[in-house]
Image (cartoon, rainbow, N blue to C red):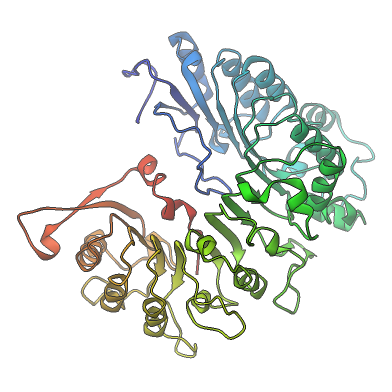
Length: 521
């Protein structure tokens, strides 16, 4: 895969066109999970900064070869959403072979969706992230508004509402992947339209949804909590009630305020035996107040985790959630088929409530523990007052005989004065040596960003070589902002035999651990 501009030597191969703004930075997706369902053919990358570069692309005759199109919020720099939508419509009118549209952080006009429907019959994947402040930014609504309509909206607001309201994702019969995040405005109307979308999408394999916090806040403040409370349960029930057959989803992303809270509602909605990847954003929803409290004062939410963590989901390979809590551990403990957990990659952004390494320890409450897993995250940044030390956690990992573990993300405390720059490197290397199938490793950033790290790139490289020497089965290592493919030379020994090939962004996305892991201490 290469990158460039029109006129700089693009071949006749398919094109990924990215409209990124002046910084030409690819957007970080809201739920950037491992995309087994994504369109994966090799393409040339063309990056566009300003919108005035688009006529040159049209003149080049390249648009019919565009199969992937990404529009990032950076494209709004110095212009208006209407201009972006208008320019994209010009592209869509000629991009008749488009398979995938990714739209991030810009208001999406109904006309743009109409053009996509009309001109791109081969579209299979749509990923849309509306701006978080879409209601205030475009529709002139405030979280304090009592109604969906202002008393006296001005002319600009009326024009914007005509452009950006009443969106519909119907009319894409070949759709395989539909992700719509920060759903806004009339949440009930959108759900009703989505039921019709799903009925018309027999090939759908990946679904991702979230509600905009701004919309939830406005509904809460105006006494319309029924617009968002139980939204996903109602979607499932209304779809089933329509008489449509169960979906065959392989990937399900439940973002903000999207939770299965009723037993069997998800099983009636989609065939659980098909699921390979699930994310559930089990976090409170709050802004100026707390609108949805997930856990309250205990460790149990209303979310039915057993609907996705059970003997029925025997193809599940990746499960992630915002936080690891007792209700998730109990669902894992109820799985009595060891083949399910042996293929499972787990990741949680927040681990401060329940120790994930408890999964590696015997427990009289969970007769199937310790579990054998495929990928997991461990926090070895321990405080003196905490019950478990880095050594005791790694001892549990070794004692549990994780012969199926393929990927591990760990967080280590920095010790810049030590050889390698991290504490616990020696005991980590020893523990990893007991994992015969470990091929992917990551050491994640702690609470400090790159600019505040005390380590140099030379130290990070040295640490990677030390670990690769201690654990010869490792093929990929990520430490902080550096990503390597590992190989070994034949004419040297020790760390000198380890060869590190730095990987680019596209290559990193092929390493499952680095994409799937969302843990942040």
